[in-house]
Length: 355
Image (cartoon, rainbow, N blue to C red; front, side, top):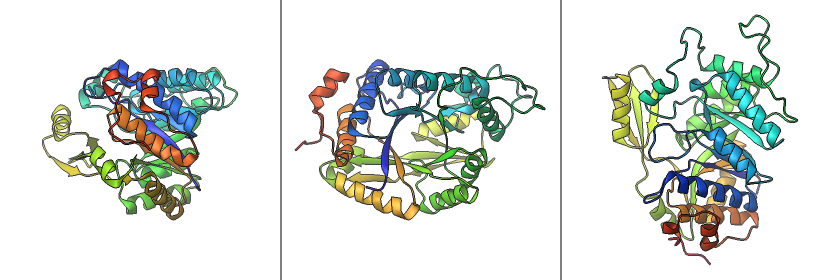
């Protein structure tokens, strides 16, 4: 296998469970991913989202680092528009001091929630002083080092502590512009293929990254493994993404048509379009999923994939991760063992048949 696998976990709250259950499962899944040989385990950031438990990835990252020992752990990603770059630098320098060589700082441009939660997060921001996203990323990059240039109003401010090894810096995005920005800042780039699986756009973005001097991009994608293709497709069900297109040219991915319409309402938009999309998902037996990843790795010249599971059922998600991880020569864990590690009792029985 010419590539490594990593996981992105959104801590979804399955039917009949709580946020506490979802977070306990995230811990159990990270521990199992470490046993299976996955390279990284990232947690997402969502605000005002009843279906997701992780609104503060830096806290979840700290907890996961304390409950694992080898796997890299990070944010996938911090929604930088809401925060002081100085504070984000302090937070991840502290995490990197607690677990040297194991921390990833993934940063995204999206809001991670609806406009009302964005306003709540940014209520006290001084908009006159807030730069655009590229400026925020440049400030963050500077504060991850020794600070901004001498002609900057914040010259002399140094984010501490200084870790033995800095966090790895990765920009998450889905366009050539984001890819070029990552390369200009000297950051790695992870293409969000689970949100935009258009092959031509993936190739344009990765080409833009490499042409601007970037090296070793990652690609995130949806993947589900099961004993048969029919099992995998049944587990996915009618998966959809609803893309809200505003007249300003901005677009946002939402989980439902209702959420997209509510986003438009909260933003005050009257001229908009909602497109219903079926995202690309690698859904098949583990052998066929890995063959597809092998081909994609060769075609895109990518040596690492970040797998996002669209499944919310805890046992089914664990089974998929184990089926994929089985190609890494690890022994599958029984679902009942996972219950003891933190599964809610209501999800003891997997719908996937084990050998």
